[in-house]
Amino acid sequence: MSKRFTHGEAESLLPEVERSLREAIAQKERYEVAGESLRSVAQRVSLAGGSLVNREAIMEDRARRDASGERLKEAVEEIQALGVLIKDLDIGLIDFPTLFRGQEVYLCWKFGERGIRYWHGIEEGFRGRKEIDRDFLDNHEGERLH
Picture 1 (tube, rainbow, N blue to C red):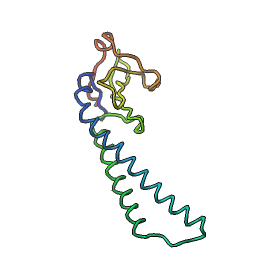
Picture 2: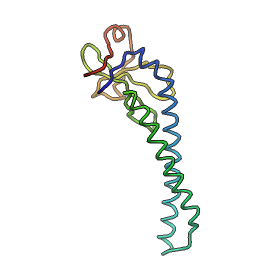
Picture 3: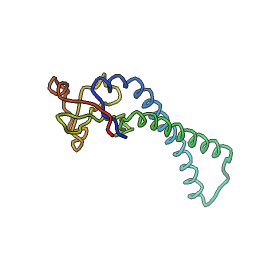
Picture 4: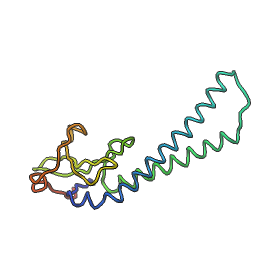
């Protein structure tokens, strides 16, 4: 079941979305750092034709990577459970589905922006963002689909 948001509903969710998004971004970075450490060890072993490795350090990197991966998954699921779409985790790009004059469009928010000030068509993406104006506010609607 999809959710469509009014501008006010989407704005009211921003603190929760931002908290979960901040956690997801941090965990993604930790996951990537641990993964890079593991790849580096594997590359050194491969280039050296085999070598002694610190198994404990490798196990710690794997545990860190796995724990970060799990926390990342949980943070993403928290956002998605709200009906919000994550478009680009690297830059923190989020869309809230809504209707504008009967057509599905997205309220668009990027991590760090103060409030939701833009919208775009579903095919336009980030580059097609338009500023939310009075016409948009007067002619958009949110609802639960059945």
